[in-house]
Image 1 (cartoon, rainbow, N blue to C red):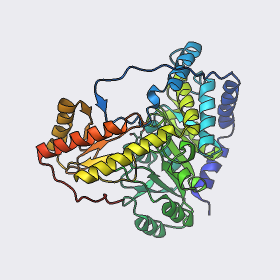
Image 2 (image 1 turned 90 degrees about the horizontal axis):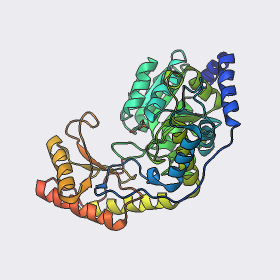
Image 3 (image 1 turned 120 degrees about the vertical axis):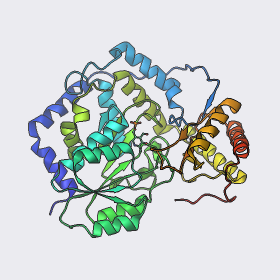
Image 4 (image 1 turned 30 degrees about the vertical axis):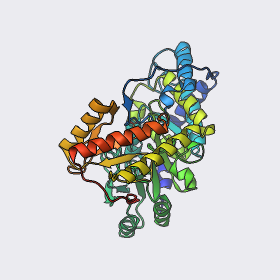
Length: 411
Ligand code: PLP
């Protein structure tokens, strides 16, 4: 009986020359010199204060990142010039993949043009390249995960959100001989709650299942060096594949997976969104690299983010404004009505100069509309107070329901 991980690794071995060729392309490109520099330049401030940006740490305007990108444009031009295997691999791609592998304590990493493409491309291969694979997927998993699993055509069972018992039951009821993979997120994008990762990885391990973890809303923000929730919980070794984005905490764009070398090689070789597309522009890879390197050593941004998130949690609890979870920096304020959510968003913008987008169906179920508030590292505590006061005024005006003045359920 072979586990999912063993079968994917064997599949990579079978790819033989094709796989070695890809690796050699990477080595050749990696011999070029690197160029990531420091200087201090600022972007001008905006009139409207944004409270729903996924650039959670403000790295999209960090001088180190901007300088690295400009230097890379000067050296390598605007675009990559091709797909990764045909002219589109620059030293930055290689350095970035090495940095990501190191960050996550994995053997290898692979860059995609977006987080969506990473999930879609990797899951199609990981679930689809192994015969009779059974996938266990959290019911709140992101659209990119759902699409990847659909494209894999693998058999899929959905477990109730963050419900370890339900996952355990589904695994126990399945044929022990089948290769299995558990797919989940660490910080959930719309609810802001965090997966019970220790319990989930323990159950997965018990049943010999690979664990694929989407850390899109955690990388840069949580764990030592910003390596994410798995690293924070000391579970790096129990998560087989970590998936992340460069477009949120790291402030640029792009997505990736990191994992055992044979698994990454299988995805590198078979994934259509990796193989058949123009690669990430070198300047973007250079910017992401500068961002990751900075966040691996700097706690400043993480501390500011978390202080602001905690302050907002407290201010909302004090005002009886309901929100879904206080487990992360994603503060999903519950409106529960489509029109009211849009009106609240419009009032915040028109009266207070605060932009926070209403989230309606299909991103959330009908009747569960939210204002997905993302206090960032670039906000100041007085700005967080102002935001809470403005939200309170809107709540009052629209006569929206208040919550009990106690902390939300830690889902
Ligand atoms: N995974 C999750 C959980 C997301 O929320 C998102 C985007 O919001 C993605 C993947 C896709 O990442 P990207 O925006 O880099 O395409």
